[in-house]
Each structure stands twice: as C-alpha cells, then as structure tokens.
Image (cartoon, rainbow, N blue to C red; front, top):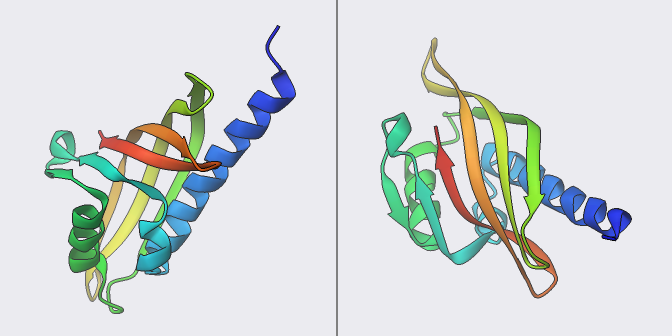
Length: 134
C-alpha cells in the first residue's frame, strides 16, 4: 500500500514549486526563477504560437528579454493542478493558466491555456524539467 501522506507531501512540494514559478516570473526575480528548472529544461510553446527552447539558461534569457522590462508587468495565475507522481523522483502535471501581459499603455494581452509539465526531484528539490503550453 502506498504511503498516501508521503505522496501528498511530494505533490504539495510541486504545487509550491509552481507557485514560486508564477511569483518569481511576475516579480522579475530572474536568478531565483532560473533555480526552479533542471539544466536540460525544455519549453515548448509552439501550440500557442511560440517556439521550442532547449536549456534552462536559454529559456530564462528569452523570457527575460521578452518580459523583463519594469514597464511591462505580468500576472500569471495557475490553478486546478493535476499532478501524478510517476516514480520517487519524477512527476507529471497539468495546470490551467490565465495570464495578463502588458504590451503597452492601455494594451494588455489576456492569455488562457494549460501547462503540461514534467518534474524531476534533484538533491531533494522538485524542479521543472519540461513545459508545454497549449
């Protein structure tokens, strides 16, 4: 019989990881945000009109270059997590997303979709290994 309390603990840790993802992104804490990803992180936003990026450093640099201006506030909210532990050190998750990105004075982009993610536990910490935005 699985240890339900331990599984719930791990799932909660992944929820906290994703909460920090949103907060660090929106507050532009780029160094802290980078520490949430595995080095070989893969971002795929092609289904939502974006691009495929391999590597956490490349991904963070791209997002910082795109959304990093102080005059460009963002608000990312995720909810309704569906998290499945696939081993003691891996997991998958789907999150509903809603975000607002200021493109210019009086011009905001409202986005909705889903993050489909994988996670890996490294040195006792859950990290985001891949993310596909649909």
